Image 1 (cartoon, rainbow, N blue to C red):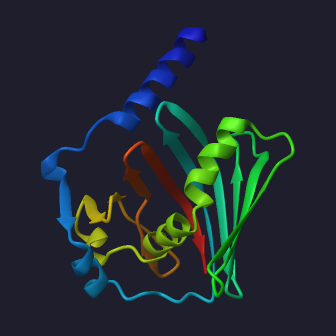
Image 2: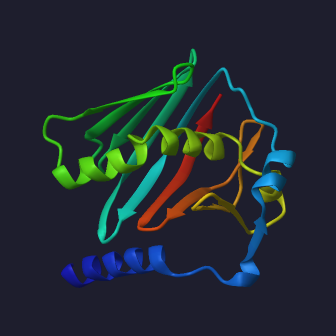
Image 3: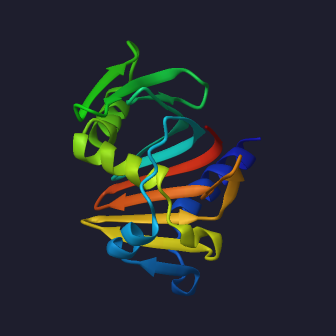
Length: 187
């Protein structure tokens, strides 16, 4: 049993660090992304998925539940056992971010979440690229967009209702790696 568990952990961590092959990646510029991707102004949506967040050598895996309605986003970050770690509220019109952590939070986890989701610039940037994937995901295996110091990878495709979305969106910057595995999108 222990050998199986150790093997699974090694496979999971190594799969997060394996570089992409250049032939598999189709790179587009941010200007090209903006010209082909109309900015969707969804009145409502719910994204359900899993996330993997690594900063330096510290990591956190869990679930993400992101709901947007009435010009407000509420993001719930849960651990693998479905216990809430944090609730992030985005007030879009005011460009404000509020984070409420669970009482029994881990200090390292709180710092990691705060570094990504607590930074007003980062969270609104993430929202733009999550809600507006490039149309090239329909025909390419992996799409890469470089924006400022970020690398955004879109992998795979899946249709939710009438909306085409990637299966995985990965954000990389310096020591930060965030992957969101989209399980469901409800409009």
